[in-house]
Length: 287
Ligand code: 13P
Image (cartoon, rainbow, N blue to C red):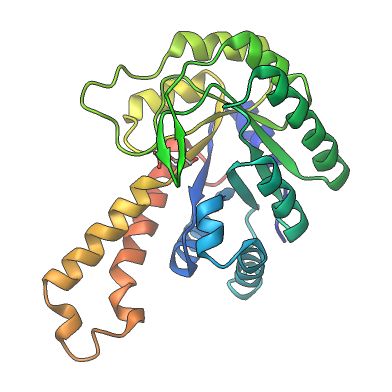
C-alpha cells in the first residue's frame, strides 16, 4: 500500500540521512526503482512530473500501475507516490487519482499567493493523510517545461511556508535541474543552514540531485536535507546502456529486438544508479 512521505522523512531528518525521490517515466523505470528499494530495504519516493504523468496516460494509469506492482512484486518497504513540481490544479487531480503525496510548486507566484494556495492544500492533504511539499525560491534549469531561474530562497519566506504545516519544504539554494554547468558556484550552505535554523524539524528537500558531488550531498544532509530528488541521472544511465546495446548490434542478434531484451540493460543501469544514490543518501536498511 502506498504511504504518505511524512513518517519516512521525519525519521530521515531525525536519523540524519535522506530518502531518494526517483522520477518515473514508464513501467521499466518504476519496476527498477521499486525492486532496488526492496532489495536494499530502503524507503523510496516515486516522483511523477506533470509531463511524465501525461506521457504515462494520466495519473489514474500511474496509480494503477504502481499499486499493481506493489502487490505483484511483493514490495513491503515504504513507498510514496508523489507529484513533482505540481500546479495547483495538478495537485488536486493527483489527490483525486490516489497519489499519497503531492508537491505544490508555488515558487513562481508572489509569496502571498504561494502562501494562500499552499494553505488550502495543507488542509486537503491533512484531511486525507497525504504529505505535501511546498517550494520557496525556484530551482534552476528546466524540467518537463517547468523552468526556474536558480534563485536562492529567502529563509524568512521559507519559515512562513513551513509554518503553514506542510510536510516537507523545497528551497532553492543554487541547485539546478539537469546537468550542472562547468562554472556552477555550488550549493549555498549558508542559506541552507539559516533555513534549517528557522524551520527546525521540518524535513528539507534538495532538488536537482543529478551531478551534485558526494561531499556536497553529505553536507546538505548534515544541514537538514532529508529528501533528495534524482531524475536526469537515471535518464542518462538508461540512455547510455541502451545506446551501447544497439551500437554493439545486439538488437540484430537472434531475438535481441524483443523489447524485453532491448530495454534490459537500460533498466539494469537505472537499478545501479538508484542503488548508488541510496547508499550515498544513507537510506539503505532504513525501511
Ligand atoms: P535532476 O533531474 O537534476 O536530478 O533533478 C530532479 C528533480 O529535482 C526533480 O524534481
